[in-house]
Image 1: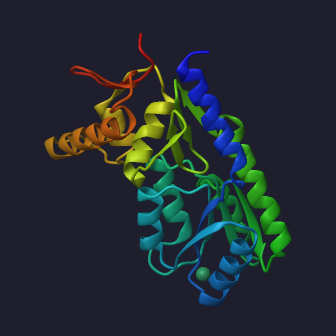
Image 2 (image 1 turned 45 degrees about the horizontal axis):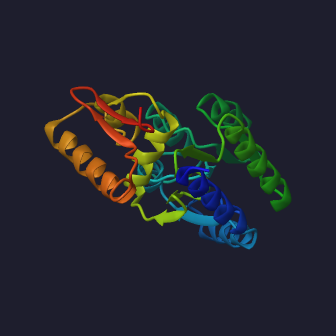
Length: 248
Ligand code: CA
């Protein structure tokens, strides 16, 4: 068996032995009591929870951080829930969203689904119902793509956000992970700088500064993923972009 295959087996064994990956959840809720109750309930179920209480802060989080699921209250101070949701979807944020809406705002429900929500629950709701909705949208969101992407001896787990190379953990920053995940999702395809600007940095246009930032991140990724490995996986395609692939 080639060393590479042994590496993948070791990586898979290590991942299987670890606990179920924690779902990273963004709770957008301005009422402190409700937010605290959601945090307590979700953490009790083993979820990792980040709470944002205003529209602006929630939008910033959504577009700069990664989550498995978002619980979104519609009535927020500042930018309201629907506005944030539409804007985030336009920016390419594909995270499943469950809208939390009041009983008297039936219209909101319909609009919420139009704005890109995956499901909704009506307040006050039973916590068990909310959990069921969350599990359903997360499952739906994942059917199209495996949790772990494997390229040679590199394993990128998009759910637990862990990366290993030949069974050894690779520590990445949030942005480095997002970049690697994008390359892994499009393995063996050349990913252009324009695409990275849009999909990973979520900016509308390229700039020299941003090109430099991308170069810095790619070179850090190379150092962490490829240095001292006989097979290099991250390749530059001059004048076009980058590609993640095994040796040709
Ligand atoms: Ca509210």
